[in-house]
Image 1 (tube, rainbow, N blue to C red):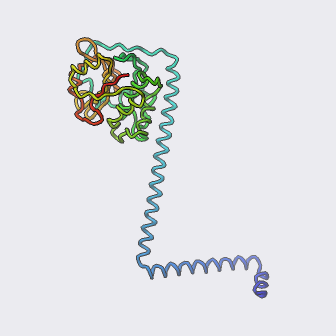
Image 2: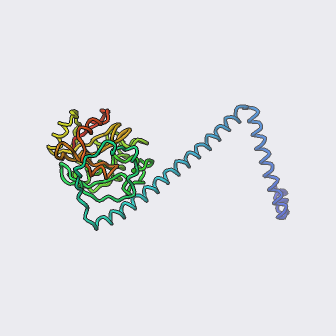
Image 3: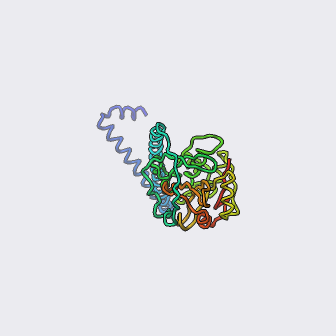
Length: 305
C-alpha cells in the first residue's frame, strides 16, 4: 500500500491527467459491456427503452405547448383587462347617452348574426337602454375594451361572448347586489363555474346560474306565445331569449327583450349589434325564431328583481 501511494505521489500533473483519462475510458468500456450484455440477455429491452424515450420527448413537447398557450392566453387577457380599465377611466368623465328606440321596425334580414359576427367591433359603447325594470347599461361583445379577451382562455369575446355580455348587462344594472361587473367578469365566472362551452360560447345553464348567483330571479318560460311574453314584459320582467336559426343566427345567440312598446313591438339589447338595439322588433317574429332546445330553461327566461 505504501509503495502504491509513493507511486502516485511521484507522478507529475501530466501523468495524473493521463491516469484520469485511462480510468474514464475503463468506466466507458465497462458501461458499453453492460449495455451489450443487457441487450443480449433482454433482446426486447432496446425497443422498450426507445419507446420510453419517445414518450418522454412527446410528454415534454406537449408540456411546452400547453405552457406556451397558457402564457399567450394570460398575456392576451392581461392586455385586454388593462385596455378595459383605461377605457373605463375615460368613460367615467362623460355622461352616458340615453338610447331612444326608433319607431322603424327592424327587418329579419337586418338580424343575421353569422354575417355580422364580430364585425361590430372597435368601439367603446356608452349608452343606457330603457327596460321594464329600469335603465340598463348597454354592453357589446365587440367593445374594444374586451373584444380580444379570450373567453375560457381560448375563444375571443367578440365571437363567442354573447352569453356573458347579456348577463353582464342585467347584473351590472339590475342586480340587487349592486355590483359593478363587465362581460369579462361574467366570462371569468362562467369559466370557473362550468358554463363555458369551448368553441361554442356558453352552455344554456349560464343564464339561470349566473343571474341567480347575482341575486336576480330567473324563471323558465314554458308558454312562449307572443301574448304571454307581452304579459311578462308588462308585469316587471325582462326576457332573455336564446334565438335559433333564422333572423338572428344560424346556430344560437342570446339577446335580451327589454320592454314592450306601442303596437305590440318590443325593444331588444343585442350584445352583437348596437344598431339592432336601437330599433323596435316584432314580438311574434322573435318568439317564432326561438331556438328549439329545452335544457336549463332554454330557450326563454323571465328575469325579475
